[in-house]
Length: 593
Image (cartoon, rainbow, N blue to C red; front, side, top):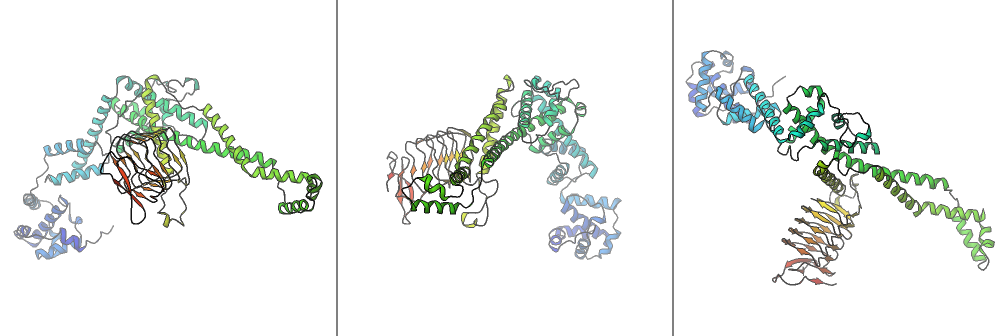
């Protein structure tokens, strides 16, 4: 492979012989010695190590340095790469640059540093090697040979992993260790988690945990629930891998997946426990997410099947009536000609087919109108109720697992919140630039949201677009974020409780904004928020600080009830802004238009 030519910028920056270096170069006898010494010196300055031979120098570098020391570039071919001369040159270069050779004590010291500071979070040997060479350069230590560097890196990676295995072993209680190690025990007869014996499945717990979810079905959902129970039944302590780097944890998980039980049994108990625990922790998260996905897909499938069933029923009874416009004209003409006669004597004879045609026409209208939507909704509800009866989520796999169940429920709740928030974000450009851009399939445009009385944990709807959001009597546990959200219609936050900070920075309320009776325990931030309709903050409790600075009120002449201590001021542009009252105890301002 041909070498890339060295550019002039690199030559000037890294291969220029400096004044103090020139004195050392000129002391050497012969052109080959001067040129070779200069090139080796600049190479060491550039890379922090000595070159291995002529092949590490490009022709441009050799000619550039040769011109500086006033020697022909061909002289470099006579430079000896072994012997007393080059060893003496290397010693002079180390002394000049302040470097020293790497001793055994240095190697041990740097191996310990790699083990404790680098390899515990980085398992890639190349990256660990880069950190080692960087550290050697910072400490002004000449790197040892390539083989010795490789041994130091491998030793650090091995020692770091063994330290992790011992740490995890000590964090796990004795009883739990036994359950984890039993997953690959030769006598393992654990076919299913406690409470699942009635299923009669002879599959081992480890095989069950490793298995992938099937297609969307009730059987797949029940299998994932059983898998989640089996994982929680082991009883691993919470936060077991809280200080473990994600890529390290992922590597252990992958090892546990690909190794057979017999191979895992050959490992030390500490190593075996760590790999299996990593697998269980990672799979618990994945299974929880899978259950949420299956639940969403099941709801969609229920709706689709319900619509298909009603469609088939109504299509079978449907008969299209042709010439509806002519029938209407004939009925009108006959009715006007004989307005006082009976319908049966005047209207029926005017239509081809008589009374039966008119009945079919009425039936066609009904099958195309709201009857279809109403029947589809009823069918979907029936299917949903049947699914709920057939596949209840576990209330708890075992009494000792109550805490684990709550953690799992929390993960399901948080995952559902994340999925919901993702579907309410429109990633298109601003409205004036999106005329030709359709909404992404993941964005539920025009979606209304009714979470009355819900408990929401660390709810984050930043950048969301919601039509008719209802959060009445909802409890927001943790920080609630609605920054840059757009509320179309009237969002209801009446009697809602925010246990920590609530963020509505740059939120846009296109209709009325109802916060009547809400409670803000933490700080409430409405900076740069925009209110278009009525803003109602009556009987609101603010325990923390309230920020309404730079709020924009599009129509200041409608009814507004602002929190105590703030009043509305009309700007020259006709909009309104909020300013603090001088007297904190003043009542909330109310401006009626």
